Length: 210
Image (cartoon, rainbow, N blue to C red; front, side):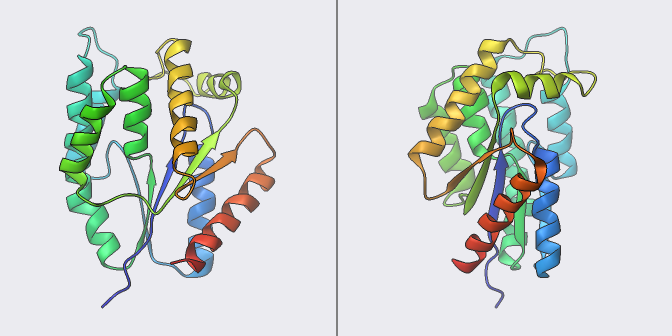
């Protein structure tokens, strides 16, 4: 039997450098010869990617926060069953761009929905599945929003007000403080080489403890 893979999630608000630093994770896995699956949320399967488009596309009709939350978990359910669990069971590491911590941050704190509702959906959809390691990429809000604003057209979330992103960042930091055994906080307001060195060291430690 294959040894179960590690589930690595990369979290953070807008403009913190997730794409750049996920590439660092993938490069390290390839250097180490570790089989992996790189994926994202919402998305990761054809059906879940269609739900992602529903969630991100700006539209005239306002989306009810509860509808948003249920769509997020609908996509997650499909993603877990179709991609994440099979990959982990096959011994692959799964590297996921955002997961349920993002739901607590964006729908919980950002939309101010009940954290108890989110926890109930988390247990229903995920069972015992939780990330083994979460890299929380963090930068001052002004830095992140400035970077995000340089990427072109903004999606439905990126068009939110600053107070929304303040709540999101605070929620992420609170979750990291509450679960120090799973979260690793990575300051991305530094030179890329230093950030990459830190991430590689964290991955090596996770592998050693596997």
